[in-house]
Amino acid sequence: MSRGHRSAWYHTLNAMTALIELMDRELQADCGVPLAFYDVMVEVYRSPGHAIRMNELADRVLLSRSWITRRVRQLEDAGLLARVAAPDDHRGIVAQITPHGLEVFDAMERSHSASIRRHFAAHLSGEDARVIDRAFRMIGTQARHALGEADQ
Image 1 (cartoon, helix red, strand yellow):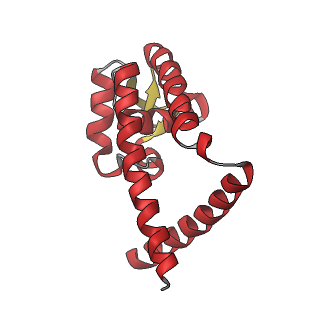
Image 2: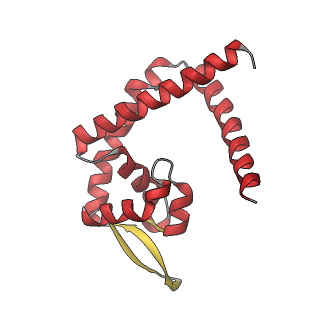
Image 3: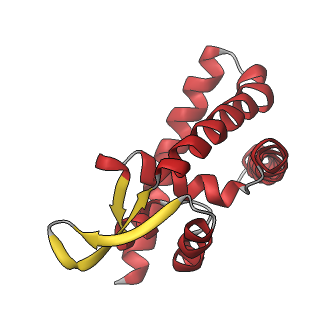
């Protein structure tokens, strides 16, 4: 591994750690909720009918994966999500955004989008963004593939 690769890795890790902490602080200041709530809410929101099976949700979230049941319970206690029987299989459970959750999610989305623009996009040209997107898509795909092989 070259010195440049090592430097790129450490700068990436440093930037992501700082950005996550910064965006968490801003979301809490603006909306009173942590970034881990947004992580769950955005995946539920993006699902058809704003509802998703719990196991699918656990596979999609980025920050809350190991605590998904607890996180959904916290969102339920806050009135943002409800756990309901799956419409196609009453044994399954889906997390669904409540009407109050839709209102709060709208504020969360505005806050988080502003943070992304301010702390990430403002520092990149269009070409920079394309290079980063391409590189991290490839790295992420390879890492997920390696994790799948390790689990078998």
